[in-house]
Length: 256
Image 1 (tube, helix red, strand yellow):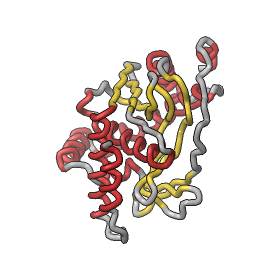
Image 2: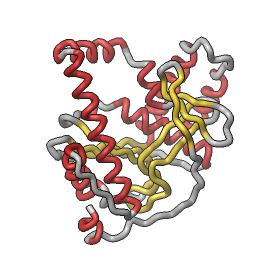
Image 3: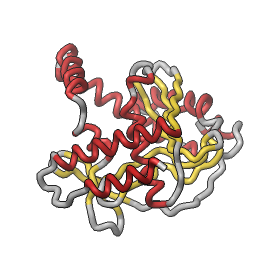
């Protein structure tokens, strides 16, 4: 990784914004973010997406687990999560210009995946505002995205994904919804106009894929997330405040 870094121009950093620190905790088994100075714990974007999965997706996941068996399915999931974490660590170190080495079996598998994303996906990364950035929409949700900055000349949210096998675009709509959620949060808090989301993905067999979503398509995914936020809070008995008016306000804002 370090050797490869030397052969590329340094990544341009522009620390335009001060991003908050956060801690993560589980509330009733659901991940929440405690944002510094906010005084509230917000459900994560992934928690909301998981809690509002369609019945079709739930049945598909259940069928997959039944085919593999519960233990085997859990093992596949856990290994993929470890590999994804290791790959993200390599990529974060690259973007920051620091060295990183992982000699574990998972690390040895993840490093070439990270290198593939660097070679094929990061050439269009023009400027970085932050990496592993905590983002939140006050009183609604929070999350962390891999990179915020300029990609191919556009203000963008960029996420890295590992996969066991190549994906079709129609299979990863939740990723686009996730990017839309992060963009809405960033635009609201920092008064930006991010309307581009980038997924840089590599399979364990080192096949690279790039998926982009922007403009009106991106707005549709943002609205899709707002519907999920409404559903999530309707189903949370401990939620005391009516967020419908706030969501309507956001919907109008992002439609402009």
